[in-house]
Image 1 (spheres, rainbow, N blue to C red):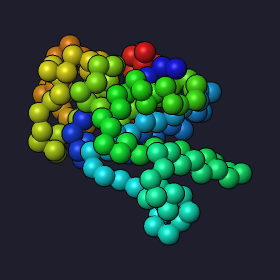
Image 2 (image 1 turned 180 degrees about the horizontal axis):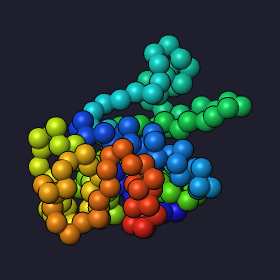
Image 3 (image 1 turned 90 degrees about the vertical axis):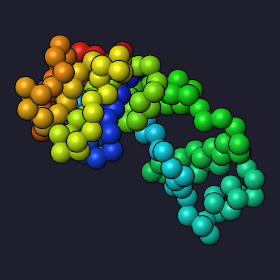
Image 4 (image 1 turned 180 degrees about the vertical axis):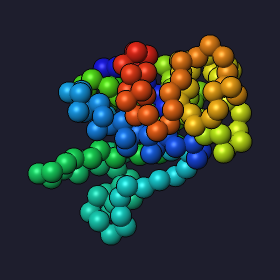
Length: 165
């Protein structure tokens, strides 16, 4: 399994880009999974559903399965947030895992940078950034890094093929 992060500030276009990258990689014959970090409380279950009631009753894990999909929900119940490595171990083997978020973790990343955000670059402070994907004028970019335009999905795929580890 080769892993690459798409890292950047909120509003940079990480999710939009991932949604374009998945079919582009699949079209080349690769299997792809994603792992997204959420900075806020989230819930994939709905109040009133059996699985929700199981969790609310105190179950540590609830696995829901059907003919179309299965999902495993694990309640931390005060335990520390798992590390990226721990979460990757739960995924089935695929060719590529695209990770959104986990800026502080040490693994190869593409920095997604939107000029209109007015934020600073993650590179060079984040030494794991291998390339920049941006809509910014090349003259304003940090020197020495490969780059691709946010709208050039195939060029970003090439960066993934080159830098995913």
